[in-house]
Every structure is written in structure tokens, then in C-alpha cells.
Length: 150
Image 1 (cartoon, rainbow, N blue to C red):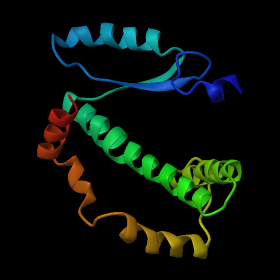
Image 2 (image 1 turned 90 degrees about the vertical axis):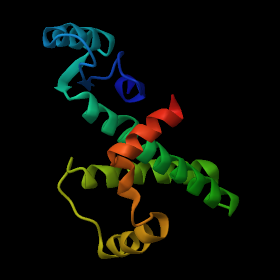
Image 3 (image 1 turned 120 degrees about the horizontal axis):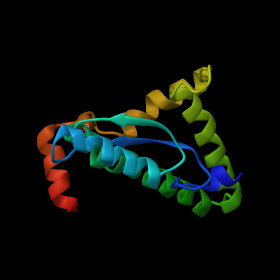
Image 4 (image 1 turned 180 degrees about the vertical axis):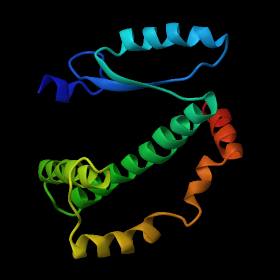
């Protein structure tokens, strides 16, 4: 349970890290990775990516996409609470489904969604997402995102 509650890692939770060499000789990468492993210990895997790939991961994937979608999920939970569902029931229901749905979507468990769930996804994605949402990963948009947030 302590590892499950260690949301940032570096305590009870084992985790993976992603590292990039921003400047300096290639030989300096090993020192940076060693520091990353110490800060976020215990580390299971360390992945080396380029600086450009790191920018796709953050801010692109983690902040622009995932944080935005999670913020919408929180707003959706708040909406069902405003419509009468008890807050604790809505939260427990949402987090439980996030765990199961995420495990299936990311291939952590073998499974498939029901026909009803697949139909809800087919309806929900175009209602919730713009057709061109993947443009957030275009190099110009990544650069603009970095400018906006720094």
C-alpha cells in the first residue's frame, strides 16, 4: 500500500525513468543517468531518449495530452456529483474504472471491452476530441508549447 501511495516515486514505489543528454559529451550521459537513478530510486528501468523525444514526452504527451484529459475527467466527475451522485461514490467508481480500463488499453492484462463500451468510445471520442488533436506533437507546436509554459 505504501508503494501505491508513493505517487512521485523515489520512496516506496519502484519506477522507470527516462533520460536525455541535453548538452555535453556523450560520456556525460552516464553521470546524469546515475543521478536520475539516485533521485528516483528504486529504479527498475532507465530509458535513453533524445532531447527532441523528451519534448514529445513532456510537455507533449504528459502535460498537453494526459494532464488535459485527466483535468476533463475530474470535471466530468464533478459534473456527475453536481447532478446528484455522491462524491465518494463517483470518485471510487471513476478510479476503479480508470485502473481496469487503463490495464486493458495499455496491455497490462489480456482483455477486451464489451460491445457497449466500444460503442460508447466510438461515440465519445469525436464528441470529446478534435479530429486534428495529434497536431500537438508537431515540432512547431511542441516548440510553441515550450515557449508558452516556460
